[in-house]
Length: 96
Image (tube, rainbow, N blue to C red; front, side, top):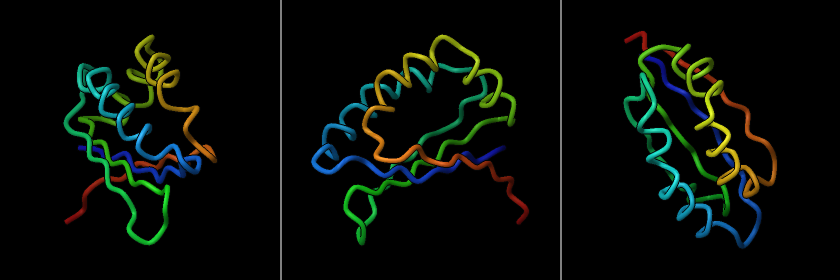
């Protein structure tokens, strides 16, 4: 299992719209090969900051399968315009 993690900084005043858009876009990613789960968390200390955690079976399910798919283009069209800064996406593997 691979954990994709990124912190998204959303444009001021767009937070609720982003939350709604992510919920509406969730079926896009949940239908992808290798998808396991998605979690959205809102930061309590920093308005407009979110932590998004997505679990994949393999790294390639995300980096090749999802990102190389037409579904990713739809995901981008629905969500990327909310970002104040483009988030850095990192991948983690569980050790313990």
